Image 1: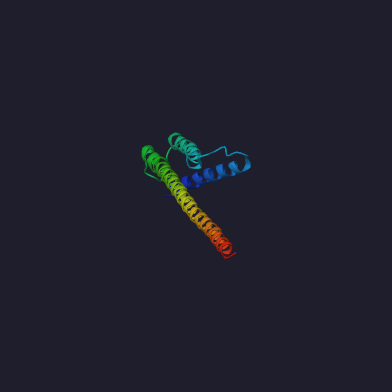
Image 2: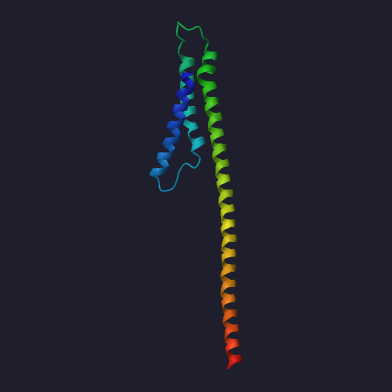
Length: 142
């Protein structure tokens, strides 16, 4: 259980580290922080796996190298990777929904502007028609 939290911590260090790096640069160097944050996770996992393979297991634990690699390296890395892809997919979906919402709002605003311009045109044309009828009526009286 501790290995999962360790790799999640490494993932968030990479994620926010790439965010800080993007803040220091003029243009964002890292466009997809979700997958870029997996690079430190994979590097630490390789080092962790190397240490497990090259050193003998503790004498107090009855564990094989394969089960240690699976429990402390492979499973946490798979869980963190799946979580990163889920968050990336979820962020894209919310961005798409925001884009659709913005397009819908723009269309509604355009319709409202068209309705307002039609009302303004009708009011001005109605006022000019009223002016014409008043001037016509004044001419007939004279």
